Image (cartoon, rainbow, N blue to C red):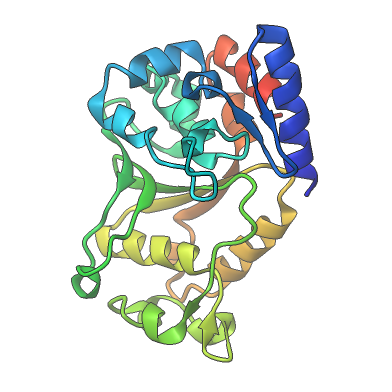
Length: 246
């Protein structure tokens, strides 16, 4: 994938310019220390917030000797670089773009309680006030699940035309469906965050959005790119994001 190659090349230049170090692998660059993945102001805020600190402690699913956010491919890292920044609530252009308020609480890894899903943890990447967000970077898709699992969500068939997304009892774009059902349940807005180069994910998003039966709900769902967000943050963070990601 071209995006992975771009992120590796950016990470190599980033390390060279800042005298940092890491390991280049075929599919990702792994920074030697977790703090190397973060903008200084964001990281200083993270280490002073226990919930944020716990969040960055997630182990990499494929490399158990490092943390997940040490990878150049980490969508959680770019998400936290922005939304764990101490001044994030002061950026009016960002608040306007995302329709959030300066007094909204920010919660990473939010777990909504679905009546028939109490046996299973369902994690939303971040919740800000009355908006929920799914963050993607190099992930290949939105995962698929068997129809029987998707039907465990209350009223899912009243919310989404599952026939349009199902083939041989397998439902595509499960993560988007999960977020949309959650948005409907709580009356929230839902935003998907992706790199502007990911036309594949954009196409899948459009497919799911078009399958929503409630058009007012469909109108509350929006795709926003990381590049759009980067124009709404402070100049120093924008410079960091551009160098590391774009």
